[in-house]
Image (cartoon, helix red, strand yellow):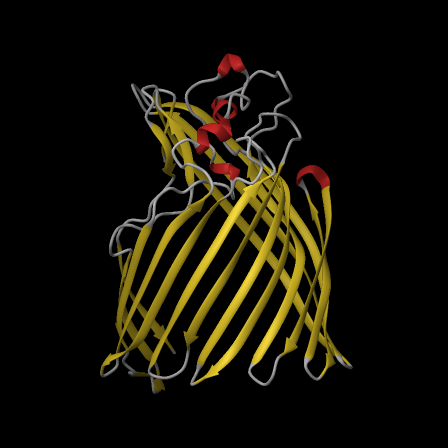
Length: 383
């Protein structure tokens, strides 16, 4: 990934690996269905940076790793003929920082008639997130990662979720869904290069969808609106927020004999209380790094979920496939060659952005990555 920092170009590269092992059990005990289990997870992360011109000069090679071990137990209880309750708790121990967490979760589902269900759910969750190296106030910057605030370390962050949803069967294989949610994040990295400081962020939104999953022609239509705001009042306006709305639809059906054609389309556009042109500059301010090392840019990719997206996009994906059923060694098999065209309009973005300003005043909010037009050919074989 190329990054312009001040008037110079740098090349960034990173890799993340994760291995997870878990066991899950289910046991019925009278009116309660009990689920319990345990897991162990190991995460490795590597960051590299170099200056390609005039010669390829390595600037940074940082590695971080962490383990997490935990277990959970939850129970489901049919409290009444139309009321289903579920509750439980998960405990985790993280090797980074020696953090131990306890996360309760619960939900209640009420049947509204024979074809509709209303569910209220909430819970807490914890996981590792990537953060820049914590710096005590006034300390010297050690390397390129410190000055650019690259996320080279791991920290335990958490979130509290609350959701209210309605799921209704409309008949003819058609279902309608409505959901509203609120999420509060804590332990996130900040633009401040100060040890132990972390940000609290919030997000909220709604989803509406209609889908048909049976019959020769299936499809869906959905609308999603979500927005986010932070505890960091960097702009002087406490109710600043950024968000995105997305409309998506898809259809899949038999076209000729055993050939299947599918098309998916999505449109997204930004929703914000801020001007896109200078929001990132105001959010960064002059307090991110010591004054002696300030320059014209910084990497704000780690300030999620408040990354600012200023452009709309239109995505189109298409697929065609055909199925044959040959017999191999006397056994029935199913062979399906398929061709998929992902992002046929070459407008799909990756939803991750950074702020970069050049010495000439250019730059601003730029996509970290875009998804190009990608043709995919494959064969599915079931036996």
